[in-house]
Image: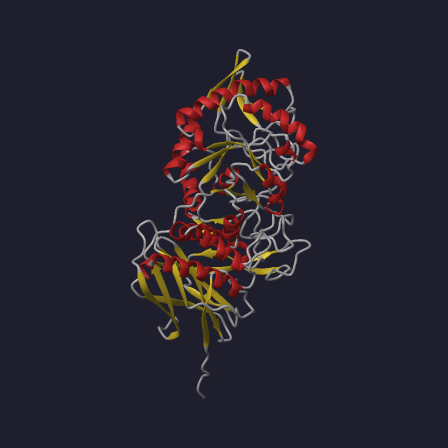
Length: 552
């Protein structure tokens, strides 16, 4: 009796279509247009109808762009905590497995699970040199372990003869240095640390970020009151004769290292505790021959001792910033997410800092306009839901952020169980609203809520049940290097969409980009084309208009 013939189903879907194990993806894409130096992403999707999993399958890529193509396996991760009060624009609202992790293929090759949909992430990378202009065809063939061809797919890529405009946004996603040190067993800012940190920093810059949280002292972020995070302090402090001596050698090394890897802007860590600034950050110093904590939760930010410390430290820091040549690219944080009840405290903290910093602007995530009404913040960073409250103040810079909120009313965000469009649309939204940058708190927060426990980010995606899955990090730590998430690639594409609109603006005027924004219905951070086909049409129109402008 002949053995039955089993079929492998295959299709290509866009990068913003998240592929679930048991649901056939509906959006298909077999061609696209890109600018010469962009990265184009899409997904090969297979379904193995054999009643068992197969391993050691392989994919061959052919075509003149094949040398610029990389393949990664899309892996499902567990999401235990989904957003509360979620709207209906999620790919799933129940706990379960969702696609997120992108990893290289290992010793098992391409594994096709039994009767489930399997996605392979394809990236066509332009890079600094750019791709050759013209129409190109990529051919993909899937072979089993014995060399039998299981599926064949092709994809057309039109490369336009123009480089995307450089990104003029300030983009930051906070790096958590204690997470790096704990996971890899290295001490902060040592030679071994920099070996590992380089993996993260290269990924950070590759994904489009250009502003870096710089820990003068251990950042007082997401820390339970009375609790401490691993010391990550760049400034050496010594108590001498009732005063202080400062050593900036580690800060200088850090800044030079960051600049060498593409960082342009530096945001100095918060000088007061989160959610109002009532206490001091943890500051370690040499005193009486031993290193000890001189400031922390036990010291009020309004104390004369801390004021005296800042009066000594900040002028020295300012001189160091001048020495490093980064004054025009530096920003000072005071306290993260203060509420209106903290306005008076914030004003006092601001006065302590600004008198010494020679006009270096203050910048904080805060969502109530009282801080602008009092004139006590230079660059407000409101949550996307409240950005419009700050427009009347006509600030030179208005950076926006989102975090675990907003998670309903269709606001864009980056949770694992959100549709890809809901994450990627951010670039067009930033263009539409005139924002000058974007901030997020979690590039690699590998901890529970309030940093009370260390977590395995491959197993825990929700900070032990407190943040919607994926809120705390964009990348996964690997043995060497890091593994990206789908969400990381979607944010890269968001910045590329912004730059494509800027490219069109340069070629055809701002009115051309604004017209496409208006026709697509992008009006706010929760008004945008939500269907995959509608977003794809918007994206295609940008490139069509660029192509038309190039001909003119």
